[in-house]
Image 1 (tube, rainbow, N blue to C red):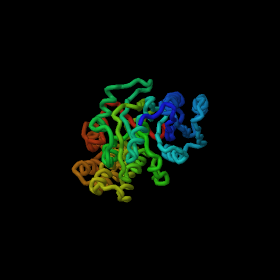
Image 2: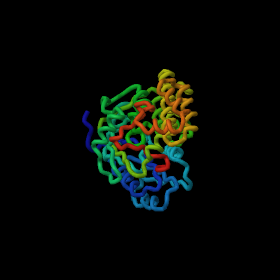
Image 3: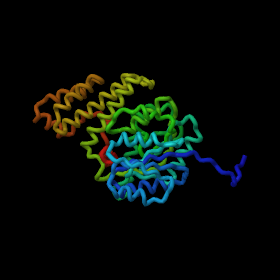
Image 4: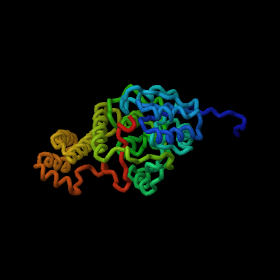
Length: 348
């Protein structure tokens, strides 16, 4: 049956949660990319986490009734800003965007199309570009980034279940590269995370056994810039949050993955955290996490880290200054991408 041109096609409401904190110039680009989507039935909740006046001025400069400015009068942290903003949404679908990232004009249209065609899919996601502070695309970095997150190996279309893809390969770029069914996220079920709230979001989406829909196009842009986390900061913040999440996942026992594999993930993240602390001169604190990692997943690597934690300072400094790799291979981001995770203070 051919649809008549005069018929109105009902487009479900999509809620956009845009987190921002004191980056008005980047915010202007991010908000422009949300407003300029080819898919128009949007509500755009700009969650302003106690920013200075220029941020408010940027938001007010957009004459668009779909924009809702949610002003925080004290900094409540990135996770709470994201959770409270998401609780206020009304849409059938939900997308998160950070204030220094950008969507291509067809981002929402193409991902929502996949969700509408496949009711079993709870999330649709895409690949993304790496851009610099000036918004210029770094194509070599984008290619390496795609391969690192294993999106170059993914077939387009449905993947069910998607536990491995979401939790171990971390192929789904939640904060600027996916759209979720809003009703699959239990916003009351959030641990108090300082970092990586997006990892818990995707766990909540995948634990019911639904499908993920992959669109193999770069429909968004992730910005790497001077206000991104330093490698030292991200090396400490990220593995600690990942380990906390995996410990909760083990306790819940809601996904059909062996406890051995989950324990290995916890142990590896604690090991990465311990090595980062040792490199930062915090050997005493590092020993605690090496022991925790060893208990979860004993290995030659974790045993070596345990010995190193109790070694004389001069030996420890010598070893860490040389290219030894105590961290699991999958936790070592490729240097050629110049890829640094955004730290929580930047968007909190």
